[in-house]
Every structure is written in C-alpha cells, then in structure tokens.
Amino acid sequence: MGNEIIVFGPLLLLCAAAEGIGGVRLLGGWISPPFLLSLAAYCALTRRTWIVAVEIALTGIVQDSLSFTPLGFSVAMFGLMGAVLERTRGLLYADHLITQVALGGVLGAVFGCSGALAYIARGAMPSFSAAIRVIIGMFIAAAVTTPVTFWIGAHLDRMVGSHAGAR
Amino acid sequence: MRRWTPRYLVLALVAIILLALPERLAVVLKRPVREVLYPVQSGTTRIFHRLRETVAMVRGIGGLAARNRKLQSEVAWLRLRLRQLERLETENRKLREMLRFTARTGYDLIPAEVIGREASGWWSTVRIGAGSEKGIQRGAAVVTVDGLVGKVVEVSAHTADVLLLSDPSAYIPAVVPKCEAYGIVKGTGLPPEMGPTCEMEFVHREARIATGDEIITSGLGGVLPRGLLIGYAEQVTEAEGGLYQRVAVTPAANLDALTYVLVVERVSGGGSSGGQ
Image (cartoon, rainbow over all chains, first blue to last red; front, side):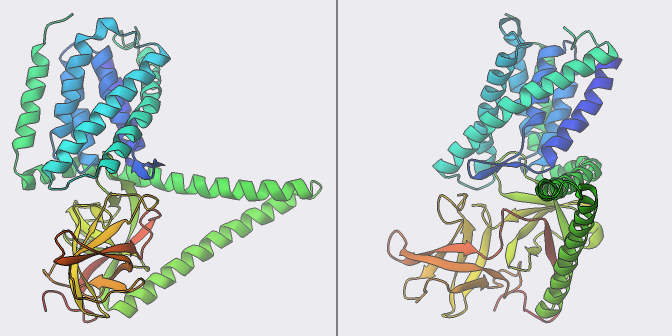
C-alpha cells in the first residue's frame, strides 16, 4: 500500500502538470491532454484495495481544480468509470497497447460527453458543432494519453516493486 | 463479473457531498489545489516557452550551417546570441507597449502571464499567473494591447481564471460608439474557421451598423469599464422575430495566441465604470 502511494503521488503531480500546461489545438478548438482521466483508469485497473477510491477521489478533485467544472463532478465521473472498469477488469487485456488506445478513446469520448452536463448546468448551451469537436477531440487526446500514462505508471510500479501495477 | 464494491459507493457519496457544496465554498476548496499546482503549471509553461524558442533557434541555425560548414560553430554562436537579443528586444518592445497602453487608457493594469487553459475542453478559459495577492478581483476585465480578452471568474492567491469572450457563457455589455447602438456580446463557442467567434445580440433593429465598425464595452452593469475595445462588426443580420439585429463580431485580440495579458485593476479617470 505504501508503495502504491509512492507511485501515485508523483504520477498525480506529473499528470496534473501535463494537463495543466495548456492544451493542444485540435479540430479548431483547445483540448487539454486528459492525463488525469487516464490516471483514474490506470488506478481502477491496477489497484484493488480501498486506496483506489482515495486515488480516484484525489484525481477527480485535481481535475475539477484545473477546469471550470463544479467541484465533485469529475470525482463522480471518474468514480463511475472506475466502477465499470473494475467490473469489466477480467474482460480487458489492459497491458496491450491497442486495448489502452481503444479504452482511452472510449473513456475520453464519454468524459467529453459528460462535460456537456456540467456546461449546461453552468448556464451555457453548447452548439452541436462545438459538442462534436470536444467529444472527438477528447477521444483522440485520451487515446494518446492513456498508453503513455499506463506505461509510466507500470514503470513506476515496477521500480518500487508495487505488485498491483506490475502485473 | 464482480459485485459492486462499497468503496465506489463511498466515492459516490463524496462526489454528491462535493457537488452539493455552495459555489463559494467549492471555490475555496479548489484554491489549495490550484495554489499547489501553480508553481508546477507556471514552471512547465515557462519550460515549454523556452523549448519552443530553442526549437525555433535551432531551426534557424541549422539552415545557416548548411550554407557555410567551415564557419559553422562561429556562425551558430553568433546566431544564438542574435536570437537571444531578438527575443529580449521583442520582450522589451512588448513591455514598452504595455506601459504606453497603461498611460493611454488611464486604467491601472496588472500584467500577468498565461499559464494554462481550461482542462475539460468545454469552456473557453485561460489561467493566469497572478491572483488576489496582486490585487486581482473577480469580474475584472482582462485585455491585451489589441483589445478585450475576457473577464476574471475565479481567483486564488497566485492564479486567476479568465473567461474568454469566445465562450457562450461570457456576456459583455457592449456598444457601437459610431451609432450608440447597445447590445450584449457573447461567444459562439465556434473556432474562427467555422464561423464568427462572438456575436452582439439585442441590437436595436434601426441601428445602422456597418462592417468594420468598432464595438467597445458599454460599462452598463458596472462590471467592466466603458471604452475597452472588444472587436469589429463583421456581418449584420436580422435576429429571429425581427425585433433586433445580430452582429457577428471579430475580436480585436487574438484569443488563440495569448501569452501575456493585462488585468484592469480599477478605473483611475480614463473611463467610467458603471451605468450611464
């Protein structure tokens, strides 16, 4: 458990820094690489104890602090995704690059889609083209960030000898 | 297949509690995380700026070296120094422009560096590396030397979030000074390639607005001072129902290339804040 915290701390900081530095111009809009979403997925797939709930909650709070979404929104979304991932863990071969790319893409699109709820809740109505741009943009961005996050996470886990990550 | 574990129920409970918090308290809770991330965000942004400059520098040097291999090292060094000086000169010019702009407008302006963009992709906001410690308050106008960029929506000690003009939730009371036509400028959420970035709504249908007319802040509502240049009229159409006109607006400031901005601290004589 201690090792998992040693891995998670720097990983969270790294992902927050990577996501917080701005964004990339994608499909005419700005998309921040969703490293924190990928980190939540990594935690849900590699951690087994109560620590996964703490890690996902912290990741969600950092995500909400970096964005304009209401505090708790990303905690709920990451938690929901984590629960689904845990239930389907046995069906996923998460060590494979193609799985990571596909998983990242799907999670990115779902998270992008869910962001519309927070956006509407804050009193703004997204245009159809803007919604499509964000969802596709998040799909592409998360498909790229997920394998990277999984790779770094697995390496850190192996370095400190965490059994959870070094499967 | 596994059964639902109680840890996710606890997580759901945490999320519900956080979502139910009053907005003021939620903002207070976000602040410590923002403050912890501020040096990281600021540092990495600076590193990225330097990297971009270095890549540009190396490209320049590479082209020169191909032309004269014999003098490669000497030319490279000279070019490097020249690029450094050019960068300093550009920075110097920008700062001088900012100083002149401050004197010209009569507003007290706080310079700030853009250190990040909104992470979810939905809102058009940027994070700047200056906050309440420098006197920045919620609702303050944010400008560049070209024109209005947006307004401050969240503040912590060292950072502030700026809602850009291009966001559909940014409502800016505006006026076309040429014909004193009042309206509200709001973002469309569209990238410039796909349509107008902003629109001015609720403009009286009799108002005679031409392409290229200046649109400035009206000062109505007392949030933003009057006289800040928002942009230029691009196209005028009749709104649904025929009661008003709608004006497509091209922002004067380049919202996609923001590195330094100025936050309007308070009005010291150049413009009047509040209604008229």
